[in-house]
Image 1 (cartoon, one colour):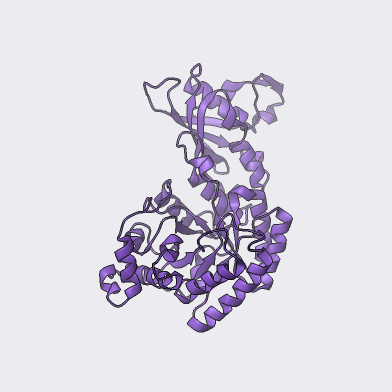
Image 2 (spheres, rainbow, N blue to C red):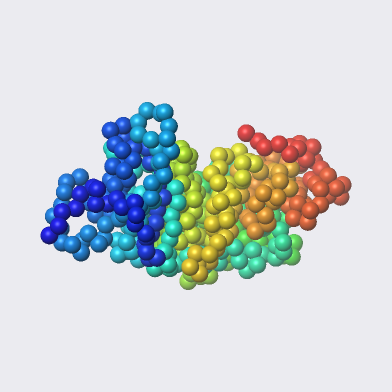
Length: 425
């Protein structure tokens, strides 16, 4: 038997092995803690240590996490100096394919430890054994070719506004106007599910009937991101209902519903060949404060592993919402992850036609772009707003100035006159 105590979880000379999960944390030690003391406690509490020295078999020690890299940022602020630390976790600590269990380790009790005044999970490097134990996206960015004929432009979505309160008939009409105006996708917003003013089943049936009419009228494929968020069993039933109605997608509020439920939805969607659009409502509760919580980068990584095909990642500071490293997150979602499919980023929040050239310049065209007020707030209504939005995106993708395209598209000209190129607040 050997004793293990906090200092046994720190080794600044340690080199992680290939199958270890490496997590980077930003920590602010408590005032009575050194950075080294705090780092060892993070590694201990997130693996197999505790506050008391334990007498254990030597093999148990092999499953301890190791804090191995410490980069201190000296400051005159009260408390210990902040630092970025890296912690390596042996693969055997994790149950394959169980995201809830993984997060209980790397973002669990450590978020409330007294040893750190603040702690933020900044980034993860996912080893092949753990990463490939998850399904990953079924389609990823290939939805642009699999479902739509979008060519070199982003696919385009809109959310009816007001986002709740519309009757089913009103909701369906907004969708029809948007589809026939040139948009690819109608999307429910995060808090519309199955309310009395717009019941799920009624909205599902009538929206897809309108979708079919719009497809016939425009000659273009259209789809609907209907929100199936609920308890897990209800979500699975709703996935089946969407498939029976001819849907290509479901939408899930992935953070509020929980990652285990997302994994169940991903499994059910594969039966039907359907994609998952991930809304990130509640993400800011974890990532808005830069010194504490879980970064949006990590949340996006988790979403990819659990199998979403599209996720909101921000607007590169062009829209109405705070964004955390949209560029870096989008790059990670497109990069190699041990053979798992990529994820299509969705830019949304305060967008309108006048912002499209700058948005595409910053983020490229391998995107889904969503506009709500920037479509429905058009003075001539949703259909005109959709036409303006489509014209602006196509012009930006082709490198044509908006003012030049607006000469042949009066709806776009009206939108530019109304909103210009300013970011709303």
